[in-house]
Image (cartoon, rainbow, N blue to C red):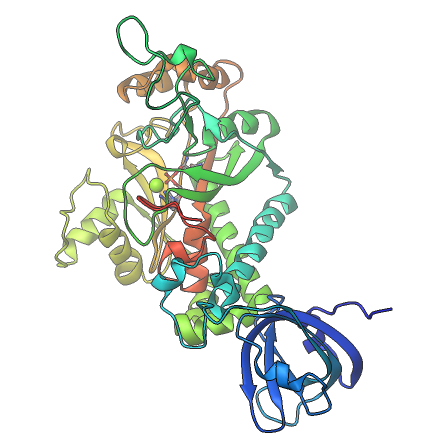
Amino acid sequence: MQTPRTKIADALRLDPPQAGLRVKGWLRTNRVSKQVVFLELNDGSCFANIQAVCGEELANLEEIRHFTTGSAVEIVGELIASPAKGQRVELRATEVKLIGRADPSYPLQKKRASFEYLRSVAHLRVRTNTFGAVFRTRSTLAQAVHRFFQERGFYYVHTPIITAADCEGAGEMFNVTTFDVGAPARGDNGKIDWHQDFFSRPTYLTVSGQLNGETFALGLSDIYTFGPTFRAENSNTPRHVAEFWMIEPEMAWYDLDDDATLAEEFVKHLLRTALSECSEDLAFFNDRIDPGLVARLEHVVNSGFERMRYAEAVERLQASGQSFEFPVFFGANLQAEHERYLTETIVGRPVFVLDYPKEIKAFYMRRNDDGRTVAAMDLLVPKIGELIGGSQREERLDVLEETIKEAGLDAETYSWYLDTRRFGTAPHAGFGLGFERLLMYVTGMENIRDVIPFPRTPRNCDF
Ligand code: 4AD
Ligand code: MG
């Protein structure tokens, strides 16, 4: 009987000697010298490769010499203490088998390829050091999201992907239809007749699960969502994708301050998890992607986030003497340049900006007593800008009806949402954290396209 496969991560932790170890993976490099061949194998279970030394006792040594980079290979051997520097242990191969040959045109040869190029081979890039590290970290942090909320008694809610409501009221939605787009059903007036479409009304991919999440919070008290969301905004920036994953907790009985406190704990929990559970991958990011990363994350975990009202943020930006491309004034939507200057230069760490003017925020945010601001918060962090957007929600039925009207939204579409304010309304608050933005922050990767497996951006839906 064959010995079972050992994952490389487990093999590298064993104490030598260990005979008859079987590993399987993809060949990273093949170094050929006169009598021996060194194979570096990686199976994705950890950052490190295992080195296998193949000597003349192997009958197929000549074949092994010609193994190409990227090939799938199986190796049986004895794990021994490595006599050379660079690794604690290595495999002295007793049996080496080619499972799947990589054609020499394999695009990931040893030379360092640019991230831009690697995006064009997104189906293969997970086999590189950088992307293996990114996607292991992504998986670990996804679990950490659930752990954080489950430990606090929050329920996980699966909110719908297809919806008729525009949560953010920004009109940046993708249509969902079964119409033949070239010949949709039309009414007598020549206009598209949505009654004949699948849902008998116009429908879209959701931009946020919040409105559905609110209805669950007003019954289960503490809930969260974690799922894909979609934005048809034509933003070609390193921080925007058309499909991204968002985590949206929603809490009954919370006000804006409670909301910010939870958001701060949540971000710190995720950073702490990355530091402790992804230390090997983070060491690589620190070394090769973003020098100082680990020290910066440790500092953030150990310091309080600043809280500043929007009005003060505007004053301090104006007083900074910095010349911005976009003007800063009370009522202006803060641009990425303002957000980054605030968190990086003025504050020097993460900062919550609170109480934005009502004109630049969504209809569901609670109106403050000053008549001109809403109980909104954005969390801004160095290098990224906006990581979180949230608010206390408008729980007063009459005010909410008014803001829906002001936003030019169709009250009928939101009647179920208004019911929550009609039947036992209660103060509540929540926020949304963009999972890819968080991953950029944790890994130091500078382009959001490089922290999501298959990015969707304007004019790009490959793979
Ligand atoms: O600020 P946003 O639009 O807030 C909401 O959607 C609320 N419904 C959240 C809530 O209160 N429950 O988006 C929240 C976060 C942003 O702070 C950002 O991190 C991320 O989602 N985000 C994007 N990430 C990548 N690409 C995009 N196009 C994004 N748009 C927003
Ligand atoms: Mg926002």
